[in-house]
Amino acid sequence: MSIVSNPNELSAISAIEKIQSGELTSEALVEACLARIEKRENTIGAWQFVSTSQSLKTARKLDNDGNQGKLKGIPVGIKDIFNTADMPTEYGSKIYNGNHPPSDASCVTHIRAEGGIPIGKTVTTEFAFFKPGKTANPVNPIHTPGGSSSGSAAAVADFMVPLALGSQTVGSTIRPASFCGIIGYKPSFGLVDRTGVRALAETFDTIGIFSRTVSDAAYLASIISRRPSISIIGKEKISPRIGVCKTHEWSFADADSRTAVEKSVEMASASGAVLKEIDLPKPFDRLAQAQAVIADFEAANSAAYELHFHRTEVSKEYIERAEAGLSHSEEEYDDAFTVVLEATKIFQSIMSELDVILCPSAIGEAPKGLLATGDPIFNRVGTALKGPCINVPGLKGHSGLPVGVQLLGGYKKDEKVLLAADWLHEVLLRG
Image (cartoon, rainbow, N blue to C red; front, side, top):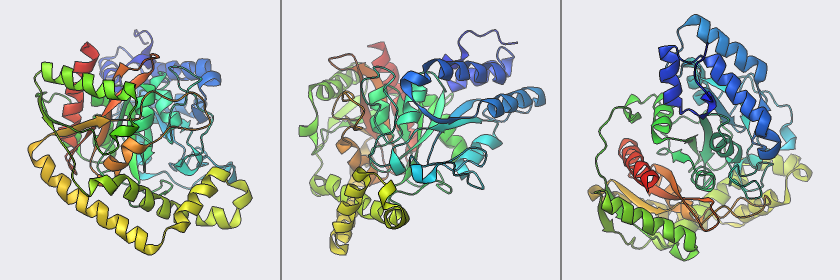
C-alpha cells in the first residue's frame, strides 16, 4: 500500500526511490497519474490516446514480479510520432487515424525493457511541424504550450507524468519546455536511436526528453541511449564555465527573454560561475537561415507520400512549408550545409574553453492563443550545431508565465551540459 501523498507530483528519481523502499507502488503512481489526466485533460488536451487498463495491468505485474528494471514502473508519455505496438500512432494527422504499427520505436522498447510504462500518446503538431494540435498551456490555458512536442511538455508540466518523450528538428523540445516551465533536453544528434520515429528532416531529427528535474532527464537519456555515463545521479556539481551569448538573433528577444538572460547571468555569477561574453563570428550570422533551408528542404521530401496522395487531407500550413522546401534549389541546400559545417568547426574551438553557452530559449513568454506554437528562432542555431541543448526553467515574464534560458554544449558533451544545467536550475530556483 502506498503511503505517499500526490505521487504524480514526484520526480521520477524520487518515485523510483520510494518504490524501491516500499513506500510507493507502481500501481499507486500510475493511478495518481491517470487521476490527474482525468481531472485536467478536458482543459489541457495533452493526450491523443491514454492506455488506462493496460498501464494499470502492467504496473500490477511489475509490483508483483519484483524485478522492475531501472525505471521500476514509472509512467512515461510518448509523443505521437513514436511507433507503439500496443497503441495507435497517428503523427498528428487524420490520414493516420487508427494506425497501429507492428512494433515499437527502439527508445520505447528500451523504456519497456527497464520497467517503464508508456502510459499513452501525447499530442503532436501535424507530422511534428508547425500546425498545432489541441493542447493548451497548463500554466495558463489561453496560451500555447509550444510545439511540436506540445502534449509531452504540457503533460509533464501539469503533473500528469514525470517523464515524456518528444523530438526536436527545429525547436520542438526547447521552446515548449520554456513556455511550460520545465526541463526540456535535446541530446546530441544521434545519441538516441531514431528507429521507429516519424522522420521530418533527417539531418536534424533528434529525440527529446521532458521532465521537471535535470536528473530525471539525464537518467532517462542514459537508459534510452544505452550510455550510463550520462546519468548525473551522485555526481559532484561544480560551478560551470559559461559563455554568455546574445546570438545574432538577439533582436528577436523581447524584454522578458532579455531579462531572463540577464538575471540568469547575474545569479550565476553571484553563485560562483565563471562567465565570459561570447560573440559568434561569421558564418553564424547565416546559420539560423541555413538550418531553416535544410529543414524545409528535407521536410518536403519526408512528406512526399502525403503531399502526392493525400493532399486534401494535409493542412494548408503544412503545404505552405512543403512548398517553401520544394522551392529551394540543390545549390541553396548545399550552400546551407557549407554554412552549418563551417559554423560547427568554429563552435568546437569556442567550446574548448567553456562548459556551456547561455542564450535565450525563446522570444519570450508563451504567446496567447492556440493557433500557432511560437517562433523557434532561438532554437535553430543549437539544433544546427547538433550538440546538446537544454531549457533551464525558474524565471517568469511580465505576466507570470515561464521564461527559460537555454544552455548549449559541444557535440557529445552531454554530461557536461547536464551537470551545468542542474547547477543553474538550483541557482534559479533559489532566486
